[in-house]
Image (cartoon, rainbow, N blue to C red; front, side, top):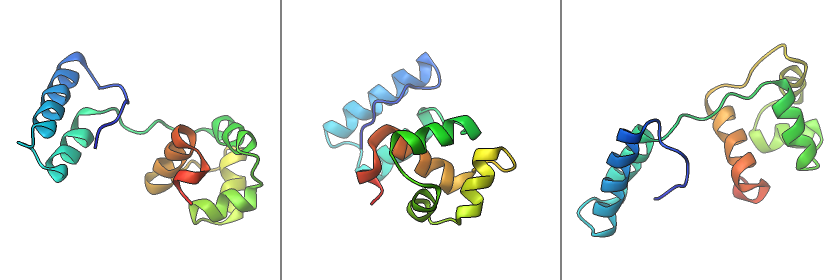
Length: 107
């Protein structure tokens, strides 16, 4: 599992590069590499009302369809877009995947 996301710092980037090299040489298995990915790479970005609405519009989705894709309610998506609530945990991760890889990655 290799990703192109930016590391938290230059040191963490060096650690991740070393782990990736060891993974390619089969000294580190896939599960251990996933742990290095999680440890070394930046956390998922925060999504505010504007980002969520812009992402939904860019993907040409209604609030109901986005809610279905994220396995949440339409009212939750509506509250995110108004700013009454903010996504967290799995919803944030799915929004990040949608933004980086598109709708096909989560369907």
